[in-house]
Image 1 (spheres, rainbow, N blue to C red):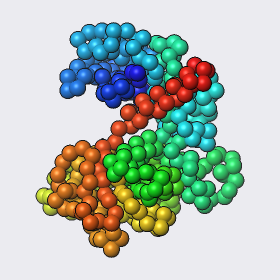
Image 2 (cartoon, helix red, strand yellow; image 1 turned 180 degrees about the vertical axis):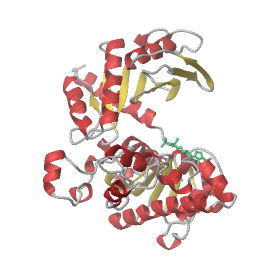
Image 3 (cartoon, rainbow, N blue to C red; image 1 turned 90 degrees about the vertical axis):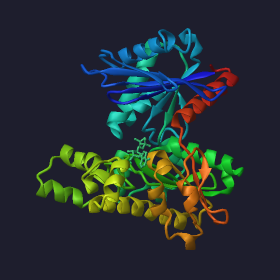
Length: 404
Ligand code: ADP
């Protein structure tokens, strides 16, 4: 079974065609700056990547280009669209409606649209991707995989905000979380890696990339997560501030004369590693600067690791302990210095990093000492594979039921 995984942004369309029999990526790419004069299309198989400028006025046109690249030319991987069995779409906000992935029909589309109020850019973009697929491949089964659905198991005490209850009733303001597909994937892989049942474990998963989030998974169920109503909450990130005193927002608006859009920009695009270091949101550049003695770069490192430590402590308290900590994404997988800082001084909690193993590179691996009571694992995330597997599950289930 071949599944086309689509991740549509407001001006981009990312895709992977995955052969689920061999769990292999057949081709992947991205259309960027869709709708602008500078639009281009990157399409590749393995390391063999072709980039070319390509006018595309909208997601429909982008999708047509993608399908053409998959089925013709030097980098084609299939002969016809019949070889695509189903399509999986990443959708950011599933609200209260979706606690699992869903077959896309008119009702699901209407709900994704209704939920756009909570994630305006993201859900509208996903709808553009869905519509583009409907136009270019009418009748092809499609499944929506939501970033938020993994967190529908959170208890109310964890997902509510202590603001007047009426706002929950009126606007559905609550914690929804994000990165759910990544947390679910690394949690399942970690249990498989350890040859344990996820339902027997207390686990903390840490997605540390440009965007960062952590989740407490108690015996297989997500019970808390760091991102909130939006992906701005929680940990300090590349350019996002994460949790700050909310009073800072009106203070800055008043003293700096910032509009609503401007303060949003400060918190989403000018804060985090970039805001503190003044150098970059990319930890590699911050690391170089800190090693050259730049004090703000070093402070950015310390604040980032401090922020992760705080959530580790919180989740250990919430679960009454932890058996396994899993890290993933750009920073989590690659930065030994950050991992060393995050896990330093936690020996009394049974968390003992092996400094030698921590320096080694590779794929899935354990970096705690052999006798550490808590195991620390690195599991490279693979959200696209998870989306493809979910798509297969939903489609096969409906086929078995005879409704597809
Ligand atoms: P996203 O959240 O955008 O998916 P990624 O998971 O791709 O982000 O992570 C990107 C970030 O990972 C980069 O901005 C960079 O800070 C960090 N990163 C990647 N490789 C390294 C490395 N070798 N050392 C330190 N940081 C790294």
